[in-house]
Image 1 (tube, rainbow, N blue to C red):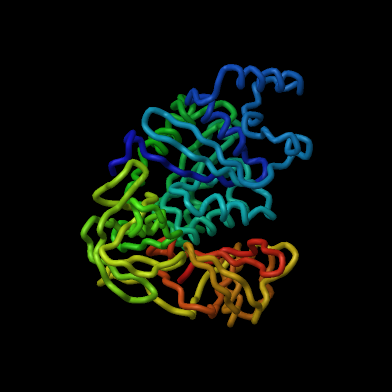
Image 2 (cartoon, rainbow, N blue to C red):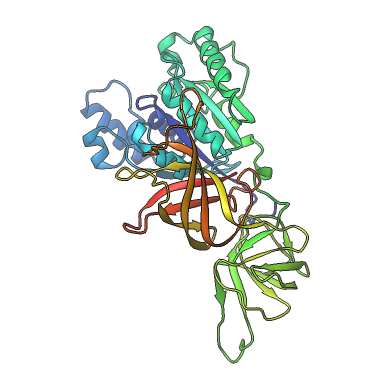
Length: 420
């Protein structure tokens, strides 16, 4: 696609249990790809020495929050940015503690790749399964299982094979298309950025090579045109007294000047007069670009309305069925409960009509008798909204297929939903 400097942006999320070495891995990637400054490295080296550690503790590069170092736990989602000559990267580092599943959902919702860390000594644990399930629910296109701490099992191939077999057996029940396994030592740097001579039995790519080369251009939906209106641009100056533009971010499809489009909810059709981006007028727009669309005729569109193709429209409905990941520590999901929902740029209210089942994280068993949906639980529910929503299934479009639940009393985000 034609972006200005031609280097694609890859978003990836990292997940693993508490001591599986995520911080060390990210520190290692930043250091070996020369994405940190010497003074940052020197500060980390000095801190490691003060702590009486023999090696430079690269984890300190990412555990930069003081409170975390005091408590020894990582809090919330930390976004880090780095780049190599081939690509730019945004890392959403999500903590491993069970109580932080919500952060994984937050950090992973836009990711192209999910890295799941597994300790070669412990194999696939409950947290590994939880992360794999969330990655598959969120339809993250590519999954990389980093089998870490190979240095502690003498780089033995059978330790690696055992984890791979165990994970593949579990993943067979999930909806994951592209899984890749890499044996690494984040501490020593094996197969992270540089190839290791200690794993002659492994002939796949290093992690960095994989991330630089995995094909992500088709991760967006370029087929189904969806443009949720964010706001209406009306300059009200003499020069532009008739100007009415609709600003927003393209959520799907490719929109071109002259295209015939339909406006929802009214159902009126018209043509695209022009498309204005950050650098002025452009001939077309595609995800995830933010643009302003001008139409041939003057229609009354407002925030939450949607511009689509005449012969390719989303489902318009007030009854939605979805998989929900619940976030609220204080209050479980209330059957018959009322919540505010936010879907693309539109907000509405809804009532929970039915809880179909709760998903057991370990066995993937659907428990239809358990209606108690607490924090971190994943369930299938049916809701009815106060106004019609313009939706696609989540597997078709991650933007128009997802929504969040907001508690009307506290205004907290209490859940995320993927439309089925």
